[in-house]
Image (tube, rainbow, N blue to C red; front, side, top):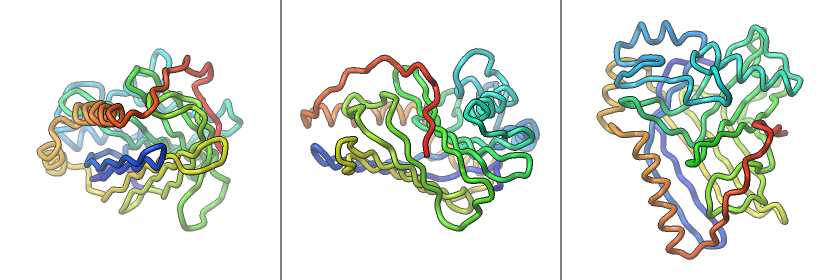
Length: 263
């Protein structure tokens, strides 16, 4: 899997019940090898790690717990989550797909970690979900060792983390994810726990671009306030759902475990 690139993304959500509601936005994301970030920052004057720049990554924007202030610390954190679930990632790579900081600010509704073992075989995908209450949770999926069959990966996990006040907790998620290449493709279906019917479909698709100063300028020129745009869109869509009189679900206490293991 080649990292150190940008993806021009289109995000769509379609809510099926209790009323139909759809949205479509443009964003961009970076795909970064956590072991190569120092070299990446040297090659791109407009990209930095842990300090202000036009584009950047702050490790503290990801992970949970104290001390995640370097790419190495972030890598240890996500590998530690896998180790606790019985998956050995020692000697492997961790590639992070996320929205970067733009002019010092970022908000990621979802970030993805692609984790390999020492043989460079993809073993774990971690879906890190952020809500607007400052909380984070990880849905962890163990990829079968040696499974190199073509086609997308499919994972399932019960919902354990509150995101939208207009969405119940009694749900499950079905993730369908292609290994990133020339294109990026992720779909997440939210299903009602009682009967498995679709409640919402969220889809992210993108085209790969090289991570270069020219492409950074192009991306930021098109979306100069990316993080602010994302937060504003979340609240704008929430207002529209409220006007449609959807039921409001109060936020439950966050789960005691930061990880939900999927299948």
